[in-house]
Amino acid sequence: MKMETQTGGLDWADFLAGLGVAAISGAFAYLALHYGLGTLRHVGAGFFSFVLGALGIALGLFIAARAAFRPTRQHPTPQARSFAFISASVVCFAVAIETAGLLATIVLTTLIASFADRASRPHQTLLLGVGLAAGIWLVFVVLLRQPIPVWPRFN
Image (cartoon, rainbow, N blue to C red; front, side):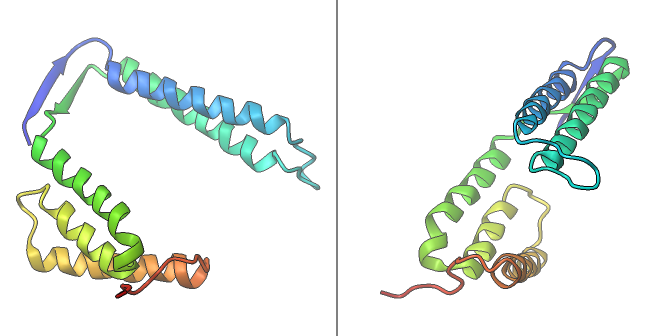
């Protein structure tokens, strides 16, 4: 991937991203106040959301502050090939999940996404796809009991 060097000044991309994270987190924290925080002994419905919002604000401000004081930064040049294959894998997942089932769809989308990187190897990609499929099946179908079709439907 080609790198482009920015010298001196503010890293605007990270600075604005940090401010964006802080703003969105601030909105979540503000909305959580409407649910009631409760006390530490008896937490209210909005307590956890408020704490996560406050942590998000801190993280966003930290990212923005780092961007303000970083003298140089390497920015990768966007690659059309990577964007195309990653986008295709997302579309494939959306189209295939209902008919192909979870396991086949995860393996297929992993294979499609692997074409975004010219250095990927087929056997490693296949192992990654099978591992991801097994892990996602375990978490979402077994542990969380989500009604996701696991096997292909042939009708």
